[in-house]
Length: 153
Length: 153
Length: 153
Length: 153
Image (cartoon, rainbow over all chains, first blue to last red; front, side, top):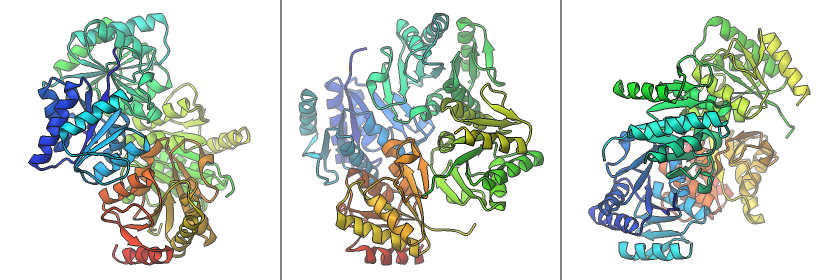
């Protein structure tokens, strides 16, 4: 198998339309660069990112908190059941080479913390203001910074 | 996304050639019926089953005990990192609609136990003698019984 | 702190009176030898063993599958919440220096498998017939074999 | 068993003397109010808090990331092995009725995130500046606020 890059998009399971648009564009960008999208598999930012990735023919993996595959949003190609509840946040980040945070609440904060702890490249759009996050303004810049991270990987 | 079936092949990370042949044939059969192969992602029975699935153009998911994607055998399409050690045995079974046990030691026994606990269809070839396992003699019969389970799913 | 020994009693959350009597006697024996009783914290064999340990002034730890301390039986001194579901079976065994299996179903089988995998001394009374279990007939013999394991620890 | 209160102290495994002094005072205060101290079981803030609790005759539980009881600091009464790595951060918080954050880095941030997610009372001294943390200046005030939380529990 060729080596593929895994990029996580993290963010809340509920979000406004503007945030969903950003997540969708980021997801599309991830697919266009040939990387695999990893996320928590649920609604909101996760679903929008997956939808974007699928619109560009990408592959999406959703690492779910529960034990029922139907919890996954419909743009998840491979739902992974964990039964770990919010502990699965750690796995979303663990499975990523690069992490992109979009908006988000406490769950996203735990993922940001784990990304920093695991010393993964971490890009953020309209999200928590935590040192170590590479802040960008929009989806386009997030995708650019991600490509830059890959070259330095 | 269309609904896909996930079939786990469980067995030891070391096995003799005859067992590997059985695992490979089972893996190929899984791919030929259009299902996704789930396994623990390592060597032995897991690797042989993945090799078989890939030889028939199938898709393979390896749920790894560690945090390094390189631990996956080379026939794993999607390595999932858990860092859970042997607790990940539970996730291999959790992600399966049907479980096929081939040979195996204590790790496989824990997966058999979880499969029985989760009331998943469980087919066994040359493995632990535990009530509840549908015993079959060879790969062909395992694939047949698996198809039968699907029809009754 | 002095070094204490942790002994796990594993078995089903439902059991008949005779099994409960055995579990209670084993729990009392564990307390009398100054060891700490570890278990899954629920009813059945777990509760009977904890009751026995408390009757002799022992200390009991219950590693629970859920996130609510009230799930613990009332003889658990220290309920540990995991939210891991049956994955917590692995932790019950991991926290034990010696494991005693009494009766039990699939959950107990998964714990037996993990105990064998972790190469822990494993004593069994009326439980699964798995190679590697030191089989004993009654609580008294289980306590004796446990003491023998300690001397060879 | 009487119902006991579990209070977690979270913070880094390395800290300066002033922070250790605060953690020790908080630990002593927790013991003096009859609560059980829960922590990650390692060095730094965790060890100082445990030392304080033991100096007042309290009880300490350390939920460890690894599988070796010797990783626990010597003031931990009951080391709980998880093998979960940093995922165990979730369990430290899950086992607490009230959480007190002292100083800390990314690991502590993940615990703060989980505490907010689980809607647990969360008190902070010289720690991350995250909305939802009840900020206090010193150990004395932390203990007071904790007592106040108990009355409103």
